[in-house]
Image (cartoon, rainbow, N blue to C red; front, side, top):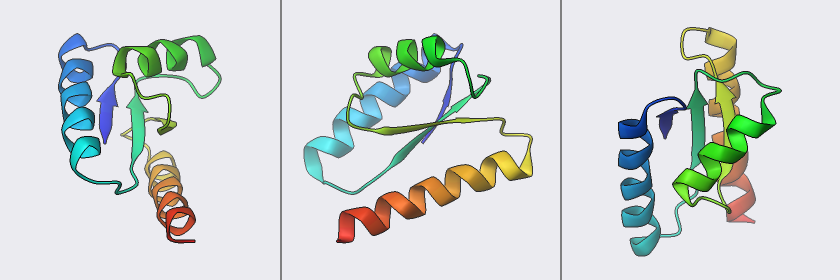
Length: 85
C-alpha cells in the first residue's frame, strides 16, 4: 500500500483500508511510505502511529525512482514468503 507521508487524506484512507483488510484476512502487506527519506526514523514512526500499524512492515520509497520501487516489491515478496513458512 502506498502512503504519502505528508498527506492527511492519504494517511486517513490508508488507515481505513488497513482496518478493513486486516479485519477480514491475514494477507501480508507492506506500507510504502512516499516522500520520506530512508533515515528519517522520526517521520516513519509518526506515520506508523497515525496508521495504527504497529505490526506492518514499512518501507520508505521515492515513487519516481525505479530502484526504490523495486525495494518495496522485494519487501512485499519477503513478507509473503515469511508468512507462508
